Length: 163
Image 1 (tube, helix red, strand yellow):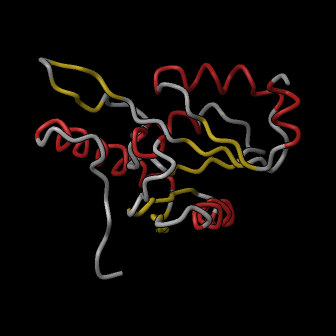
Image 2 (spheres, helix red, strand yellow; image 1 turned 90 degrees about the vertical axis):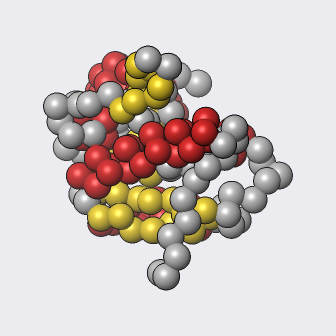
């Protein structure tokens, strides 16, 4: 199945390429995005500097906002799963036991992704507001990576208490 066929039959698509390739991936599919598609961006731009993982600044503010600038208006972009570590997601038998922050300028798209996330056991979706909140979420990932390295772990993730 080529991207065109997959996009035509999907209501929600997850963009899971390396952050530096996100814009090229979006541009390659730009003409094939159907109206109303929800594109979920999970990317976080990082760089290694002096042995440390750092956030790679984007003039748009976040990688999600950079991607949004390259999407046609008919596509609704959602930033989500940015703070859930890939190794934890890959362990299908391990409960996630964390929150997933969901942000988008489309309240409806945010809600649809939150409903989808609710289907994952031990994962609680939280409405993080507009897409601009991706600026914070992407940087939170850098903190989690730092904590993983500091404590020699691979699964640091967030759970908000009091909500």
